[in-house]
Amino acid sequence: MNLTKLFETQAALDEHIMQEHPELRGQNNLDWKLLALQVELGECSNEWRGFKKWSNDQDPRTCVSIDVCKNCGGTGIPLGNIEGGVDCWNCGGSGEITKNPLLEEYADVLSFVLSIGNEMDGSLDLISYLLSEEYKQEIRYAEIDVCDQFRKLFRTISLLDMHRNRVNFGEVLADLMGLGKVLGFTTDQIETAYFSKKKVNHERQESGY
Image (cartoon, rainbow, N blue to C red; front, side, top):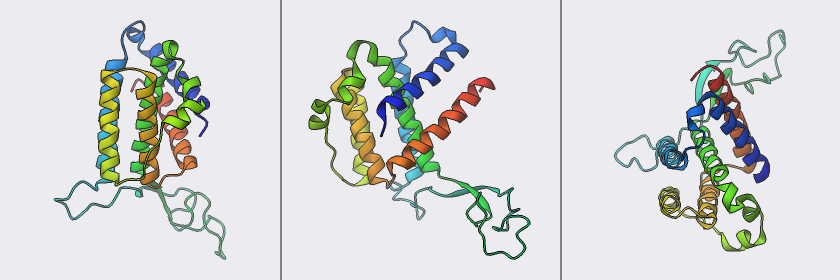
């Protein structure tokens, strides 16, 4: 995963937000960002659903239909392809446009982690640390139960809130990557979801969201 590119991309989004909300300049933005991070992590766990032991519906929300494919009209076959045999490129032949709510919420969590990192970077030289051999040797994550990984990440975020240093931030990032792994996401999936949501977030700023 290209951390430098991710941090730079998030910095551009953060600057766009500052332009639309100039009252945020020159103030402490870490407090509300840390709270927002915890909220987003809660929303991510809600889409995972595995902790809802009181429910018969504990399946993760990884594929939700949101629209009929406009390219094939819901047939799964490209318009004009009378003979068939070729799946629609837009929907893969399903006839539906779907989204992955769990992955989207995970991308939101990543966005706030990056934003917090950018907020801290000026005094901590954070990115250099995260790319160093020191970080790679110190930070490890174990493949554990998904519920335990969520709880572990909540704890490391709380620790970062109390002690705002690069080591604790590194642990948050490592635990987030560990969560992605136990949820079954690949690096490519995570990056694609992040950049897709980044585009939406820029559009939201333009529309006064």
